[in-house]
Image (tube, rainbow, N blue to C red; front, side):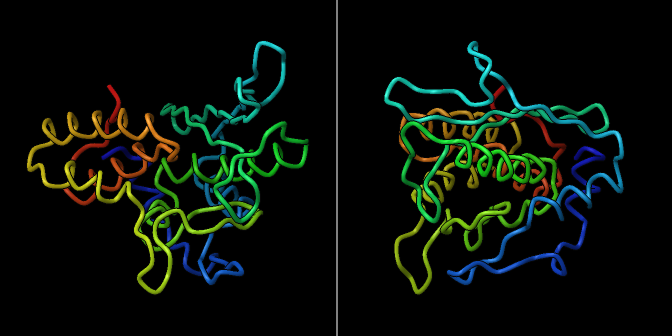
Length: 205
């Protein structure tokens, strides 16, 4: 496990958690930023720009996503997030400035979760979000639909060695990217490595 992930995953975020209208807890982007910069003052992030110079990437169907590169203590990750309507997983076509801005804040918090801060909020019962409020990404309350990714990830969790689990995680990522579901491979892999006591590595290599 990397020093950064070990440090940030051990931060007690319970006093910082807020609750959205659906009753789910989330970590505000500014609280997340303060926790990280107090421990790693040189941490750096940059939103990727398209060839047109925009800080979001427009798809042929009019939907879009935001991408970020973040570095903490010489460890770098790159991750992205589609632009959704508030409180839903409905993709926005031709997003406006507010849509892009809110997604960028959520993406910053997501990237920090991949480094360990609040990573457990990406589990089955509560999502991580930034300044806006989104519906749970895992499963709804009171026994409603379960996130299909949880069943897909079961093939990874059953593996007993890191090598086999890594191969299964790569297949999981490919499968998820072939659907409309958000790719959460990095977060799930980091959590599994923590649970198993394995050193965190890139699940897509």
